[in-house]
Image (cartoon, rainbow, N blue to C red; front, top):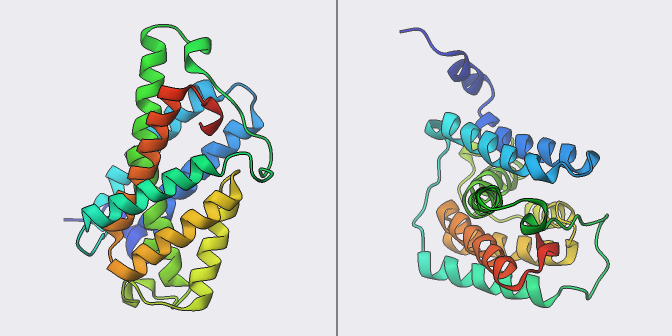
Length: 220
């Protein structure tokens, strides 16, 4: 049976499944930044397309390690608390768009947008980001054949670089830096990508619930 084009690409570029969903999400985020008002349709599109790319590449995505669910969730809750409590204590990177779906949309449209936003934040983003940051980059910075680098292998360079880059990915850069450090420490302690995904998902889901309950739309 002949190989698919996708399988051939992954064989040539083994980093592709780890990088492509994250790169797609970032590219669409740039579109959202450049086109005022596009959050209305870009975020649902990011969720659907990035999620579809993860599904398409799923057989090549390896998440070794036990989930350590309780510890991972505890880390996620701690990061959530820090993210909220540090609000307003430092200047943000760039400008933050505030989008209230109840004001911009009506009825089922608003609920559909919120559902896709929660799905993206709590499921799609944690998977795409953790496979990139701690599945690929933190290991690639140790050795170019990242698949041969054991999960949890520590070097100061990979630790500091991924923490700093994770910070500048977010407008709330200080909270992003502390979150990057915390996710990295969890990764080193557990040697588990599953634990990092659970922690990241816990933080994002908790933040989404906080936004909906408190109407603090600036966090979205």
